[in-house]
Amino acid sequence: MQPNLKNPIHLLAFGLGSGLAPKAPGTFGTLAALPIWWFALTNLSTELYSLVLVISFIVGVLVSEITSRDMGVHDHGGIVIDEWVGVWLTLLWLPHGNGLWPDLAWLAAGFVAFRFFDIIKPWPIRWLDKKVAGGFGIMIDDILAGVFALVVIQLAVYLF
Image (cartoon, rainbow, N blue to C red; front, side, top):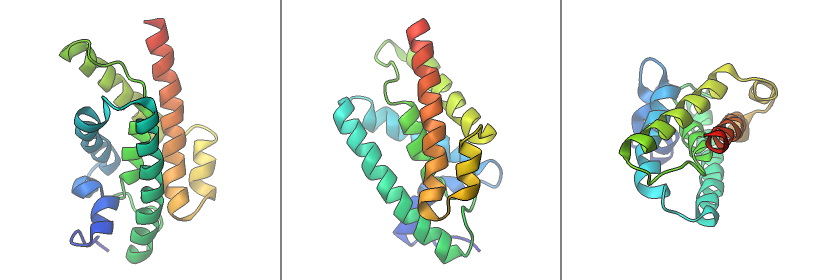
């Protein structure tokens, strides 16, 4: 079944349509979240950024739950709001403002780190992905992948 993109809940769950990519919808969904991060989140204080993450997580749980129920399938590959919030978590303290090329290099590193953990799903991410159902289950594995990637990126920032 296809989502109804005229329904704002489905539209949001499918990352404004980015989850409709026929191949690698999670990767395309993650890419679609990057311009929003670049233009809307980079200059927020840690407190406000964290609030955006919490609200986005709650909204993500709700729209994922409703969309997956409407479509009759748990965690449809096109539901990518979880990737959006996961990559935004990865990029929480990403260095920026050091010039276009260094900023893009750190952004690429954050993207790769997040996609690595989201695709590989090391323990306990894989366990959560299989055991936790509903909108919370759709969101939580990507949040944990975002935490893993955040730690790796911050370690790299510290070392370099």
